[in-house]
Image (cartoon, rainbow, N blue to C red; front, side, top):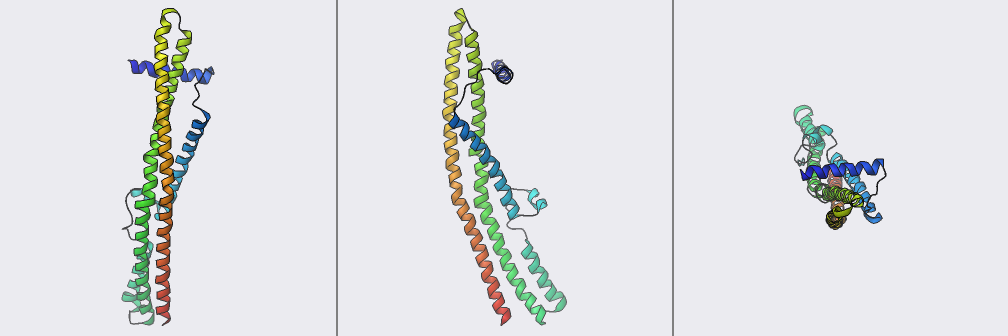
Length: 238
């Protein structure tokens, strides 16, 4: 019953603020700014996660199967290309022919690059992508949860303030005690959300290290692929 009364009180207070411009306790410009920044961070981290998922797997049908499953073991386009070259050499033009021999050599290189691509996907999935998802599902979610609690505590506080102003006679002391309790709960929640925001900033800062690892994984993949192709070209030239 008390819970229902509190919900009704919050609803009345919210309506009064919207319709009647009732008094509203401010949480401070600095905290408001941090919460606005949190919304922007959440929005763009979701976009970043999606962009990385598309980079790792351009096919939306495959991505939709299970966005969290490590897809590094799946056959990629380089696998398919290498296999097609190998089959063309062995089943059509003949491995003994000049074209067939070259097809086999190129297919081997494509297969090696395919293995490198799988390693790249696994590295980014288990490090960069996993870290960003953790940020979204833990620190960012915690701030938003505590923000919701803070808003409820503020509504409770302002509703109690309104009742205290209207109270008279022997009713005032009882409402005043409720007001002190509501103020304490509001202040406590301010501390809680401030702590959550600090934890969020620390987690955001940690993403820099993950981005460095992301670039390192790309460098490893592309440099290895370049070496394989140069070696192949030299071999074909010989």
